[in-house]
Image 1 (cartoon, rainbow, N blue to C red):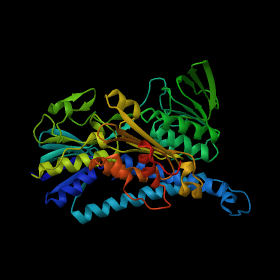
Image 2: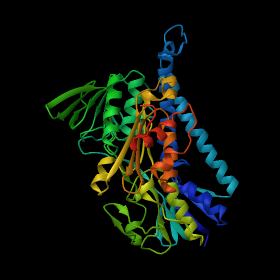
Image 3: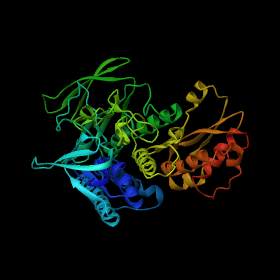
Length: 463
C-alpha cells in the first residue's frame, strides 16, 4: 500500500483527521481538488466572519459618539477593501494548513479523488491525467455545496450562492436573501449593515427555524430595528431576471408580493458532495443521498469510512472535525468515545449573535420532561450595558426532577464564546444548583449564565 490512510477532501473534517493520523504514526495523504481547508476555510466559516467583523467595525464607527468618541467626516464602508481583507484572512489560514501538513509530514495530492476499490483511489489532475493510489484505509470527507431550488437557478450574476456573495465586485444596492438559517441570516446582516437594502425571506414561521422560538423572535426584532425587511411564512415563487433588477414574486400569508432587487442570494441549505466519488461503483451504502456509517464512521465496505457533511446530522465544521478524530483513533486501535450528537453547539454570527446546545424548551416538553426555565436579560447585565449590547438574553432549560441541564439558548454579544461553558457543563452532567454556585467573574457577560440558572430556581439576584 502507498499509504496507511488516504483522505478525500481537506476541509475541517479531512485536514484535522490527517494531522491526527500523522500524530498517531500513520503515513497519510489528503486529496484536494481545489484549496486546502475546503469550503469552510476558503468560502464559508472564516471569510464570512471576516466580513462580519468589518460590518461590526463600521457600525462602531457610525455610533462612535455613543461611546464618547468624535469622528470627523463621513464614515463609509469600503466594500472592495472588506472583500480583499476577507480573502486575505482565508489565504493566511490556508497557508497555516500548508505549514501544519509540512510539520506533520502529511502529503497533499492535488486533483479530484474517486474510489476505485475499497483500497484504491483514482485521482484526476487539472490536465485530466489519472493516477491511482492505494491505502489500508480510505476516508471520504468531501463536504457539501449550496443547494439549488428549481425556481432559483443560480446564474452567478443576479441569482447567486454564498461563494459569489463573498466575492462580488461591488456592493449591491438591494438584495433578497432566501433562507434565514445561519448562512442566510449572516449575509443578510452583513449586507444590510453596510447599506444594502435587504429583504430576508423565510419559509418557516420564524427566522433561524432550528433555534428556540424566543431567540428567533428576538433576532427578528433586532433585524427590524436595523431597517431590514423580514418576511416569514413566505415563499419565493419565481424570479424574473430580464430587467436591470430582479423581480421576485413572494407568496406571503397576505397574498403575493413583488420585491425588486439587484441580487437574489439563495441560502436554502446544502447538498452533500456524494456524486462522482465512486460510491455506487464500490457499493458504499447511502440513504436519502447521504452515506451510512456506524458510530465509528465505518461504511458497509471494509476499509472505507465517511465523515462530515456527507453524513446525516448537523453539517458543522466542528462536528466534521470531531467525527474525523473519533474515526482515526478507532482505526489506530484506541478506544475513543463516540460523538455525542445531543451536545453539539451551534452558532450564528449575526449581531446580536446566537448560540445554542441541547433541547429547546418546546422539544424538551415534547420529550416528556417537566422543565424549569431560567432567563436573564442582557439589559440587566452591567458588562452588556457598558459594551452597548443590551439586546438579548440567556435562556437555560433544566429537568425539574433531577436538575439536569437540558439545553441553553443565547442571543446577544459574545454568546458564541459563552456557549462552550454550557457544552462542558452538560458533558460533566452539572446540575442547576451546581451551576448557580459556580462563581462567575464580574463584570462579564458570562455572569448571565449563572443568573439564568438562578432564575430557574427563583434565586436570581439582579432581576
